[in-house]
Image 1 (spheres, rainbow, N blue to C red):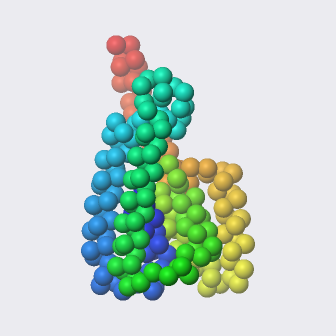
Image 2: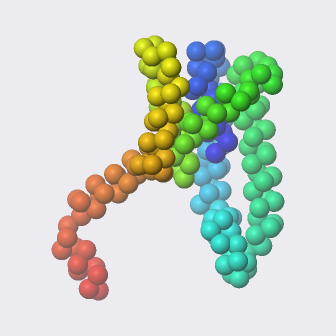
Image 3: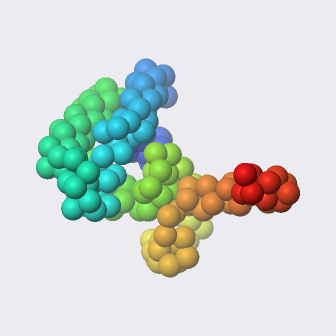
Amino acid sequence: MLAAWCLMYFLFYMDRVNISSLAPVIGKELQLNAFQFGIVFSAFGWSLRAGRDSELRAEATGVDVRRQKWIAFTLAGAFAGMAGGLMVYLKGSAFPSYFDIATSFDVFVMALLGGLQSLNGPIVGAGIYRFLKTMLQTYIYHWNMIVGAILILLALFMPRGVSGVLGSLRDWRLRSRAVPGAVAVKAAE
């Protein structure tokens, strides 16, 4: 997930990045995402979800929640370090001014816009935010107010973000294509 945050940062500051150096970064990003996907859908990932949903139930089923949290924290730190390393590789240096409060807010908005409950949500959010920012800054002086209004509407009507809504639409479309008789036969068996 943190590699996705790094990619969001690249999408956000695409105009300041040397395009020729993107190929190795994108390759490493894809490797990290594959590794993260393996973690999320492994027994470790399922035990983390169980601990997130109900620590008491997870402990009752034999999951050492405290140990799992420590391992998850360590992995998150490792991915943050890798994301920082990729950023330094791409930009050539790192300074505290790169991570001011406005940048942190922008990354937060990207994640909310795309959706926090999927691996591709923050990447989708980064692309949408980058597009919105470019278009709104061109035509509207107080574009931040419009982004704030969009965030409020998003929190009210699409709490899972754009990625969650697209997933729901995909599921609805697949269910609408299903043959009703086939579902009834399977239910009768």
